Structure formats: structure tokens, C-alpha cells
Image 1 (cartoon, one colour):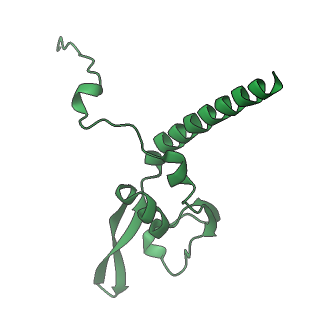
Image 2 (cartoon, helix red, strand yellow; image 1 turned 90 degrees about the horizontal axis):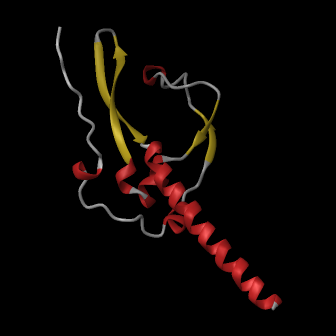
Length: 123
């Protein structure tokens, strides 16, 4: 039986180069949200979800947020006992959450400023 003691470590010391997100709203406005369906028949080996999907095209996201686009290797059967590795572009959509929050904060500050201007005009 172990008598282990756990230690809670803040994430701040393990992160470096911590900076605010520059122009989050301007960046988000460049994204082009899409509705689409995967070609599950042609790309069976990719095990893609069926039905309508909501998301982005990797090429568009790469243009705006280069670091959020990666690739995963998929092995495809191309014949009897013959396989080929393919790379499928992927988007780290979870990383969009901080950009969304920063954009909401930016919009909130804008609304606050506009409300103050309206109040000043009413006086």
C-alpha cells in the first residue's frame, strides 16, 4: 500500500511566452464556418462521421491560425495485402475556444464604450 502524496501544480509555471491573443475578433472574422458531409463511401478507411457536420476547411483555418492545423496518418487498403499511408489535415478546434473568449471580451468592451457614448450624448 503506497502512501503517496499528490501535489497540485499551477499551470502558469509550466507555460512560457504567455501573451494576450492579438486581434482575436479580426482573426475570427476571417474564418469561414461551413456545413458539409464527409464522403464516407470514397474514404471508408478514414472512419469519418456520417451526416451533416459543422466546422471549417483546414485550408481556411491554416491561413488564419497556422498552428491549429495539423495532420494525422491514416493507413488505407489499396489492394489485397497492399496498404498506403495518407495524411489527413486536422483542425485543433479546442484551441479556438480561447480565441472565442477573447473575441467576446473584445466585443463586450466595445459595447461598454458605445453605451457610455450614448449616455454622454443623452446628457
